[in-house]
Image 1 (cartoon, rainbow, N blue to C red):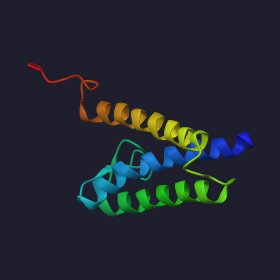
Image 2: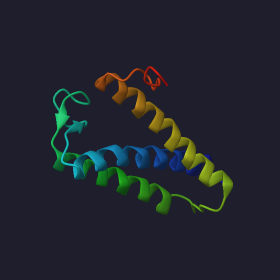
Image 3: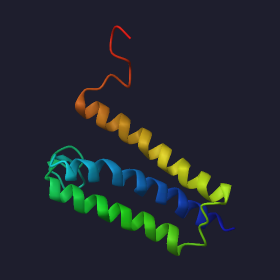
Image 4: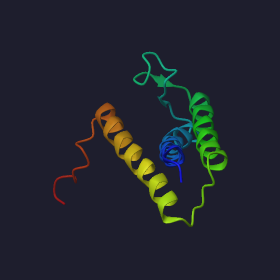
Length: 112
């Protein structure tokens, strides 16, 4: 198996993770940061832009899985590399959105 295929599966996980917050925000009618906002990644984009950005991320993730190598979800290496990309980017998004929205880094509310 070529290392480039594994890299593609890792990036498919990244694009798959990026799909989720933009799609959810968009279909809920909420604004969220995108590369198209002003300033990029800090300003807010309207819901329609978020839905379109989400679907673009989903298409890229699908393309990387479907057309690079022969991705097989039942192969532990393939699924693990995809999952690693998904996990890494999800944690990065949580940190970034936490900074923008004033989260305390995932700490439990006082009293818990």
